[in-house]
Image: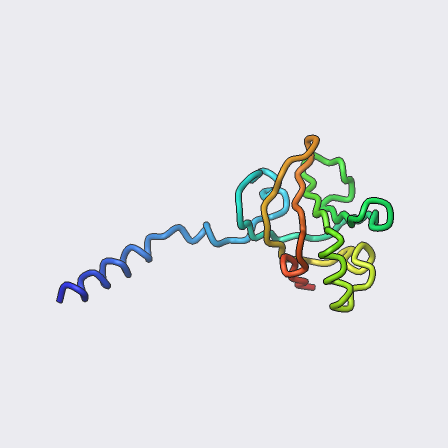
Length: 128
């Protein structure tokens, strides 16, 4: 009987959990969540910059103007680029331009710009 009451209480408590905590954030909203771990972000690539040869990274931006205050910049590491290439995405800067993505990670602010490092291709899900 006591176990049934505990289970019922846990069920009722779970019904009160804030569902918005599991909602995917827009890139703009995520750019204001600096330092929050495990964000789930809805992201459309509006511009990109392939600096893989010179700096070892590819940048994907949520705004066409990379300097826009609402821009969230994804920084794909050499490891993530290699993993994407293994999956058939040879040139991520061109292939992902205009794509709708779901991104997992944590945002940081570097020189006033919101950035999210992508260390693994598993942080990216291509929606369309």
